[in-house]
Length: 375
Image (cartoon, rainbow, N blue to C red):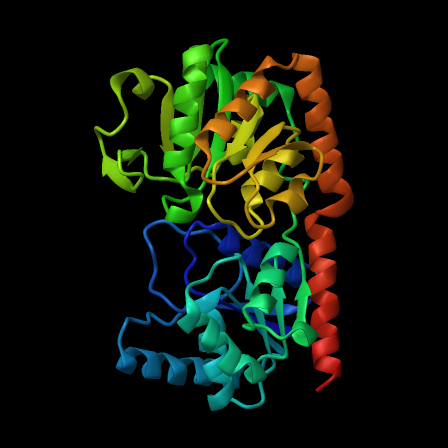
């Protein structure tokens, strides 16, 4: 089959990473694949081995029209069997592109329980006839979009995010080397990863970690993905904001490491003692699955599809509740090393049995075949 993957950008988010991983696995299985990206090149992007076209689309009606025309020429040359789009803007773009190129078969994917307000949900509903199927990466996301009538139940399905178990495999030697390079010493290290966006609710995590430090001062929190000089604070009125350079107190500054974009996440997970997620909302966060594959005990907010990943192989707490998150983190730290290792082993087994990348690619490949066969 000939498959086009449509993305908003190649920015370092979980949706982009998963879409590229699936597309590249499809290419290894003998399918012809290309990537169509709406936005211009970014300073930091996921790398891909697939041929990629950037439409350089800007926020103007004229730019949108020109991008549609350019994409139409691209599709006419490549003649894809399936056009698979990811997240709101790419999904709507691909559906409008269907009007300009009626022969294409569009498959849409929702990567979060929240992709915008009622106008976006209306846009999904109005353009639904232009897409053959709309998949969600978690049952939580699928259920919510059906309830909002953005996706009809008869056209919806769930294809969970998958984890590459060859990339995310524990290595004791790498753990020792990374801890040494990071000067972690004997400190207990919590690790998390995510972009500096409201969904990740870093203020919730930072406040929880502040509470953890009062009982376990020999603890560090490593944050990968957010800019290394970024800080977040919660104001007295409950509102949150992202602040630069001075937001964290000098005491916490010695314990919170903002690592920026890192391409050595498996090594950092090896070095960590546990993984924590403080998100307000989610789809099916890859970072949680990757941590589980690395055999790390997980403490996370019960947001979106997190529960589907974690099951009983970790601790879940309510979102936007820093006290509950701190309590769960403290409870995990009070466990013996053997108990945490047992929980981490169960987590890796769960990923192997239910959420491998190969299983996810199998599901997408089967869907593509059905879409082509039902033409």
